[in-house]
Length: 99
Image (cartoon, rainbow, N blue to C red; front, side):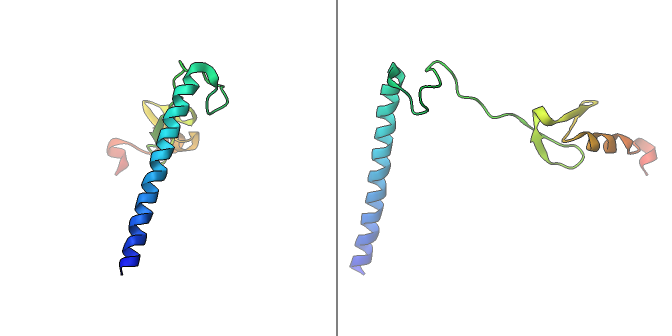
């Protein structure tokens, strides 16, 4: 039982050490990369440039699927994942006719 406990403790300490070393390496390369010696991505991005944010997603009124905003279709203030869903939604009867 002591051996299993010892193995578990050694595993946890080993994982902690690996994470600490990786964190230290990331900080060290980040400090040197900002000085112009080269970055992790080959120096393609300057140090003043902000990382690219993900594209906003919209929810289709018709089916509920989330799609990128650039690929969505907007009709009368409502957003759809495709033109077919926009047509299907507009073809539905509204108000008292819907019953």
